[in-house]
Image (cartoon, rainbow, N blue to C red; front, side, top):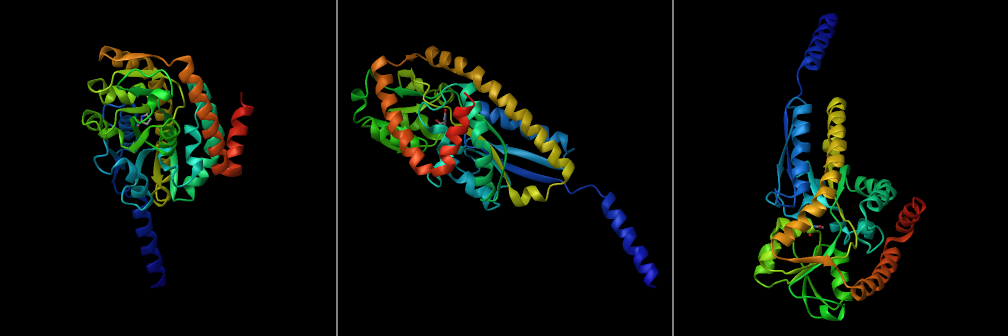
Length: 325
Ligand code: PCA
């Protein structure tokens, strides 16, 4: 009898091992519009995973903050309301200053430097995210950040009292230090904010201005190249540990491809979207020497404030980055 039981158990085990994995559908919230290059990269990543796992894991993207608003995406994934998603990394600077490493003004102002800064920061970011039940899959920078205004601006004094749309702590602080009035608004909602006068300026990439057709309300874009913030894709760590080794390999491969393609797109979109702003009727060009030097002074203040807030780990990121120069 005992022998028969053992035999039966072995047969059941063998049968279950041969059974295909149950197909899973992963909803992937994203904060930016479907036409944005990060969203396009995410959609290709999703397709790559769905195809590569033979449909065992089907990823369905939800751009424009349609499933969860940008500010709620990380929490939704941490708590398992969604298994995977994309968010602006520096959007979490209010939780931990370390998340703001890529929004320190004038620390890394080119794609090459942004890449080095990411290499310097990635192990720390992976650790901070892992402590929050999140596994990092890939990250892609936005194009360099410049300043948008309704009217011509030649100096920091000209900015006083202007209503400024911010997207993280660093951008709010920049507004305070330039005498502007910050109001935090998700990219998905800025067209309306500018049209109704809730905001009349912002710091962002040409890409976001182009996506949101801001020429309908704003007239000037100054190429300041202040920093290149990053979006990242995260997966809930409990979900991740339940994924088979072969599907993990597929997902890692797709993530690497997405990071490469996203970087390439970001670079291509820099010139393309600035031209798009011009075609929309905006004046696009470098900021005046006076404005640049005044912003750099503010950058020194913000760098010191960030180093103070981010402690030893923050300092180590900056030192590792500088040693790559
Ligand atoms: N676009 C995003 C973040 C940085 C950028 O270029 C935004 O404006 O919200």
